[in-house]
Length: 444
Image (cartoon, rainbow, N blue to C red; front, top):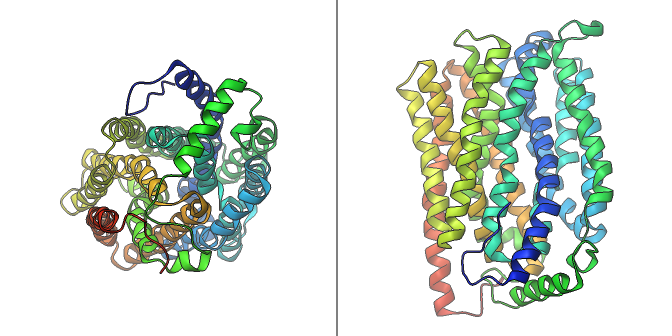
């Protein structure tokens, strides 16, 4: 796992320290997030059997899927503040164990209402994991490393679908084993790893660099001093209370920007299997076909994150990916073949996941260290509510009313285009304000 900052020269001490940090933390966190995304999105593959068994219409299924993001929104900020209080090791373990139990328990839903309850509880349980890990990374990674490291970490999202889609397709073939349907086994067997990894968190994770016995004293001192130096640098959005933070217009603009990518990833995860089913594929074939765009997106997001760090450019790297999503979604209006649909999904997912590394690196530089815990969670929570809670539901309602996947994608395309323009305008405004008043933006 090569780590090389955007600006040279790099001392041997820095190189050795960051190599050690990267290999100690990232592989484990990637696996944890991979399981999170599988457990969050496996309802899409389960729907191929479950919707018929439970009598779910597209609108009901869309609403059930969106409830995950509603509770996620309500709990995400408090969860991140709790992580700050109790420490990442204990809190991330708590998150994973509870979501694993709830995910497995989804196998026993009996109808729409019980599915509503379980999806709401799953969102509440998982809330705080992603922004918590982003906050945790700010404790360990100097700013020059964050875009590529976040991109490497977030490769778990397309990676989860690349691996999870064929796995879920296979688990659906267990239909009838021990008297249960395939979708029952899908939820049970994919929920267990989260519980085991949650227990492992207590032994693998270290809360702060100062406590890292696996670093030498020289390495610990270098990392602590480097991070302390960066905390002293001026930022654009300074310290403020949680209430003032949620009223700050820039936080809402950041949420709007991120909501496009969030909505694209969430919507495709939930609805793509049903879209592919219209071409007459079997469940197993759907699993393998659905994996193709995610595999390509996994590679693209790492390349894009490295490009952002190498050039130290964030705004255009964020904006262009959102515009790519919009273009891919509009392609649905003029295509009806399976190869073109796979191309459409590939464009959307490359944009949705390649955007994340540059965007979160950008946000982490715009937020002060005292604001980061609540700020990162607030942006993520608001974006997930808009992108997942609203857009997944909107997609289902439009498809239910019109029977058209292409028309259902239009609101999502508009959201992504708006976000692509907004990040350029906001970056220009903040840069101008930094020149005019370098003391930074505050809540007033």
